[in-house]
Length: 182
Image 1 (cartoon, one colour):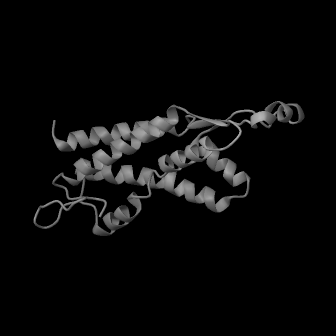
Image 2 (cartoon, one colour; image 1 turned 135 degrees about the vertical axis):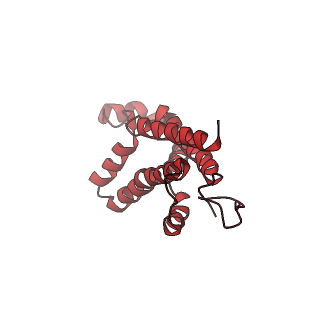
Image 3 (cartoon, rainbow, N blue to C red; image 1 turned 60 degrees about the vertical axis):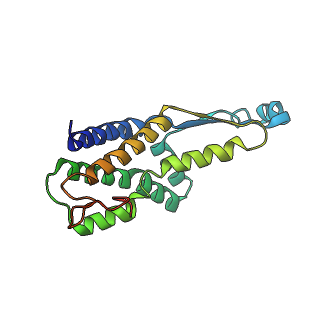
């Protein structure tokens, strides 16, 4: 199997993982109040109910709470850029047509911020796990699907940049290092 086919297959699986991960729960937060848990449950029964989060639901919740900038930023970094990245890698790996240098420049500048939700989830889990009171964070299958999508897209990008169509090549045919992420 040649690099082009492997790259296309990886992009396809990355797209599949990304698409399945969107509506899938990423993590759940099980709040607790330490020694005060029973008291809090008596006075505010719903306050300590576990909450399950997925990406579109989290963005919608930020929007409803008036955090418009953060909702737009996450929409761009976690939804629009990953889709654009996967499209560019697919296009280049398929060898349909050479992509213009302007598109590649924009792609290189934005690619390092695409799929930043995996970092944000990791950061949130770290913060919540260190909160006092015994609150717990439980990761769900969506987190693993997003991580799989990121890893597959990175490998596909490297393979596509090594193809003859030129995502990462120059006039001499020598691949720069690291290819897309200069």
